[in-house]
Length: 259
Image (cartoon, rainbow, N blue to C red; front, side, top):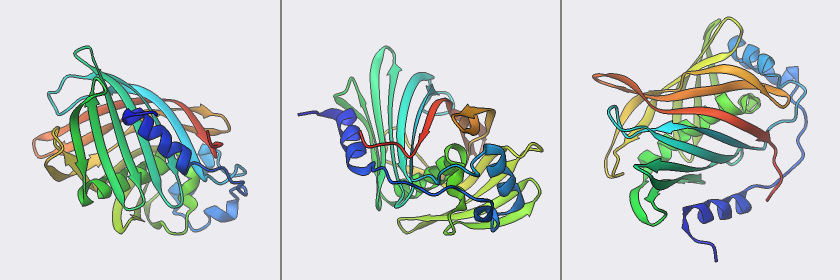
């Protein structure tokens, strides 16, 4: 029988990913959105493409624990289900030559983050309401950055600020989070900022609520849609902001078949 974090991830994927046909996104579906969000969806090329029920993303980059932490190379894969929201994120990294595996899991009302060294030694184990709220922010960020067609959902409460800024409220598992989205003159999403995410300590035992942002860049085509190819996750601490993760998106697939 399969064991370890990778095996748990694969079992969750098998259980949660189900293919269903989806009607195309239409111009009428965009009508209720703020103008900069409408423009972003058009630039992304989602009009005429099927609505998104789930998506899979593969990426690589580097990560560190804290402002002065040592950068570790990583490769990651994730699956998201749109309704009800679920996020399965698995990564492989290397720390001082020792392999490290991590699994972020958010299903129904429970979110957890576990990290093991050499596939055996627990390094981080975090769960609880702060973790679930943080993953709710991340789920909405994934929708904005990786699957913009999902932003037509009537359950998202949008507010237009001006031609380049919009705000949104998104609810999952009883947690309502807010985020601000910034766009450039070309209509591309350039940044996502939320005050509702928690920074989890390296041992997973403590957390604090901080501003979190994900500046993105380098748009390119992934099949029929155009998305940002890279970005960062940044913490805005009282003594300054810094990036703790840098990612390049290698592949995005929508409405994937079960394994």
